[in-house]
Length: 264
Image (cartoon, rainbow, N blue to C red; front, side, top):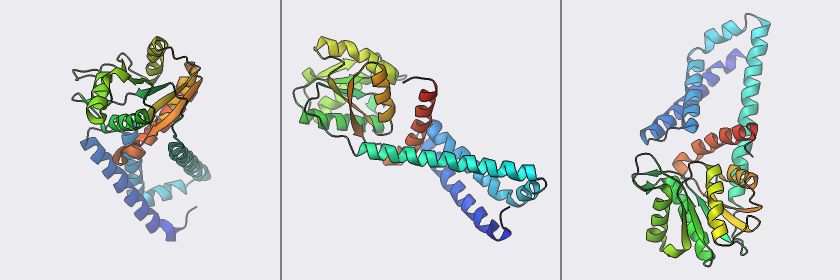
């Protein structure tokens, strides 16, 4: 079992980690950012806090039977394996975000919705639109599809908000922007955009730029290929720093669940 000399350090580190995780979660909740990527770190923080407070009686209980010690090692081993997989996933997201380059053969730009509030794009969606606008200015002859449906509590659809942002903030002509205003999921973004592509003589075999957040890109590309898009080109938008790692953690579980459910 673990040495008694290490007990104070383990309790201190556990308390420090618990405070950081709980403070981060409470701060995000104050910003109305509530999702699994916010909740899980708070649960981990609460678990570490209890672990630190109950360290001595917990260790005494574990030492009572060898099977408890084996189970305890198994729990910690599984936790470290999971944590390593999260770190690798984060590393992959970061690496992929560095390899988004314009392709001169691109036939259309598809910007995926990312949420609106009070008829304005969320910070995450604004980053997607900024990235999409930058790409559109480098490829001025091709259409831009903005995809997103009705959102609760908003007068405009997400696509309408996105189009307004592109014209007002980036001065892109309205004639370039095609609205797909029925989608409520990533799969529907791609499915419902097919009709707009066909109307402009663009085939699913053509290179089509997919603009979305860095954390969303791997799953979005996988869904696009499942939908029949043969050359989806990744174009990454940075996630705002204050929600970046919580969003990445949420996407870790979304990506795994999508794989398990055979969504792509």
